[in-house]
Length: 597
Image (cartoon, rainbow, N blue to C red; front, side, top):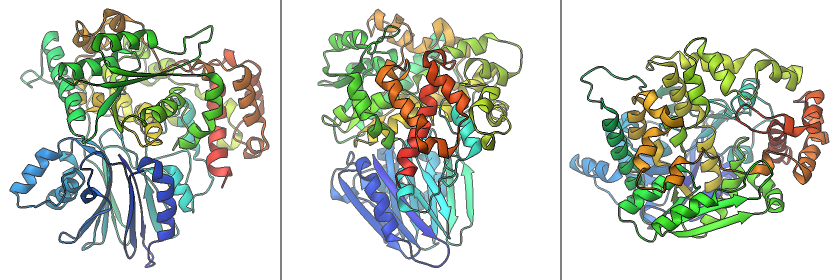
């Protein structure tokens, strides 16, 4: 919905308004409708607005309530803000706007840090208490909305993107070696609080951070996902049909809220897969007419089709949506790659990052808000590696994940990076720690919980937010409604993984969608040219990796790079990503984001 930024100084100096202006300039695509700033001595806030709820100037930000002594910048959407508004009015609060922004401000005054537990939606926000001289930062349960920060020279800065922090100044070019290991092992996932840059960190999902004017801080996790079956009498469903009915009700509610809580039309990104097609079906059942749907496709290769139009077209015909279909040629993809990389707050290996960037450009010309199917595979076990991990009933859980998911084993990683970045198996240790956390009574439940609360945050969810907001387009993800996820996490894994995964969604879709869409093989947002690297794309990556900047940076061992360049089709990860694209993308991201300064 927006872009936020701010600075708090601890050395007695006033906040740097020039840095706020530079950050706001980089955040402008996230919020093209309005920009504003606020200063209070050592504290300054900046905001770029994408107007979706309460389109009037009353909901512009930074929002200041002099009577309460509070100032707020907020990015996201609170789907239960009407209910919270009524509750707060009953407590004596009055409102001057009709949006969700002011509800957060009043909720913080009423309930303090506990307000975040009451918020139902996606959010990253900062509140400055002028009386206590205290800054409060918070992020939603699944990190759907980003919040980065850096600290140096007696001040802390925060922003919705790393690009804004880099533009503000004071961010070095150091690479975090632990983050580097995560990046190349977990398909570009770098779990919070780290990022690939040593000087930039991010607030973890489901956390808040309180910072006093002297720099003292308190950080707390406010929500955890329970992945246990529950004892008898817990109130959970017991039969398969009861589970499916409960999941259907929760999903329907999530989809409805994400349509109703908007003062602009809401479309759907329709890939042709089960997840986005089911969103269309549920919206149609709810009586939505004149629904706009959007699909994108690319050129085929001998190994893989470049679009899923044969399926999305069936959904369009079935429901009569107002469909917008875009096909992008490979030479256009290559020409636009630099723009897409510039939009990445962190390096993103998923080939669909570029696809979402190009699709969002077209969609933003028609609407400001769309629903998207991200999260369904992680919540309901839709990827091929989940049944494989579940089928192995013995052995170390980390090794089971490593065999079926890790992009590289640790030994290969050591052959890839220069000795200065070598070290222990950071990712293996991290995954072991997370899988051992209480609250999951089966290994596969622990794996699914790890994916939903950590890996999804810094892979598909981050890609969607980055690439849609690069064009002032808000993507809403009903499959990550926290109440739906809480229910699904306690659903028996055998039910979720039945028939290759996502069985509850398939059961809900039966009779609502064409069988061909339900029974089709699992698809992935295809861009074959970044998976099977040949021709002009190979030349492009060779130039990046042979450039003087890459050689001087010294991240990689040349023998490893040369082997990838000699035979790129022979080097794919376990989940079928191009290893050549991975190493080229990181280097290109560093060239575009750091070297160009």
